[in-house]
Length: 224
Image (cartoon, rainbow, N blue to C red; front, side, top):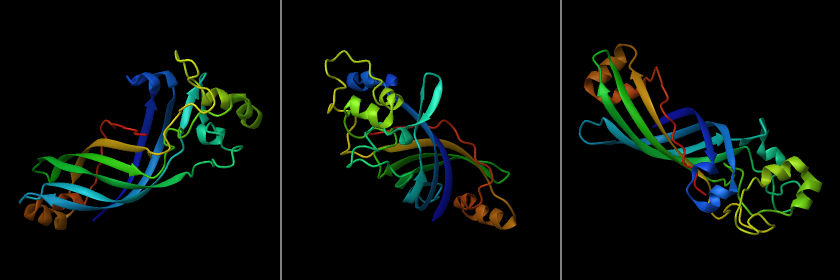
């Protein structure tokens, strides 16, 4: 078993996709994830240096976007029709997650340190990581209720398809929740004689005393 407190930066931009409709939608977002999880590790092979993990967790998120040089909280804006459509409520700031992934020990050093990497996938129970879930709403009603700025944030599309962002047109997919993944590099160091004895006996003991953590490139994959 292991408990982790993670800080992750997530972002996405429709300009980076080759999907025609998604590219025309022209949405972007970014936010910080604060995640706590408890996982079970299953060691692979006789040496037990590599492992897979899965567990339960909870995380906090609040998607933002940048528009005309300023940053706006999308949850507060209500771009999906929150605050005036009775069946659409502002999404919670916290959600459950199921973390799973693979941990690889890359190299063991003589000073009781080791270099490792981890690939992780997070299944979530929210469809609002990117603040998009349903369809385009009536722009006049959105302006009257939430203001012109919200209408601008809700529809930033640059379409070449007639009616692309008309009321009822597809904006997201509420049938599929969002998920994200991450990759990180870790430098582990065992502290104290007790951990040295454990390390000498079994390499997996080094993970019981993480001292340094260096995040590598965070790869995000937001699925809808």
